[in-house]
Image (cartoon, rainbow, N blue to C red; front, side, top):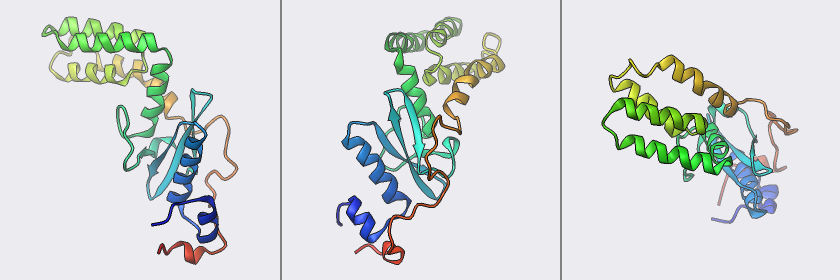
Length: 193
């Protein structure tokens, strides 16, 4: 029931959750966007540098296996790369807003050709807007494959997903994929009173 502080982690120890939650909390305390992310059997965290680039720290599985952590709300999907994709989509706020307006407008048409035209125009304006691709995918599976070529959709979207699922960050943490020892008292770290 005690607050997790650096002193507490040093004294009692901590595993990946304590380290990642502390790391994201420290970043947030200094106004840096950060949040914990889940990995198979592990907790890592992501943080934003320079208002645009996201970095994955305390990582053992990479971006492609990082998912939403309990209590964290994501914009599109549970995979962590979609969080970075949302940031990229919003860098050009005018293009993002216009693409969203076109997406909403497309949903009001019954005519699938008109929906496709609007969504196609919107993806040209903001190709990082995942919701657009999702709507195009729904349109494809609604039985209108003559106008929507699934292979073309995948080829157009793939570069944006790959860019956001990058395994290697520009700068590596010295502890990347190495165990982190937060305390001399490792046995005590397993017991929380």
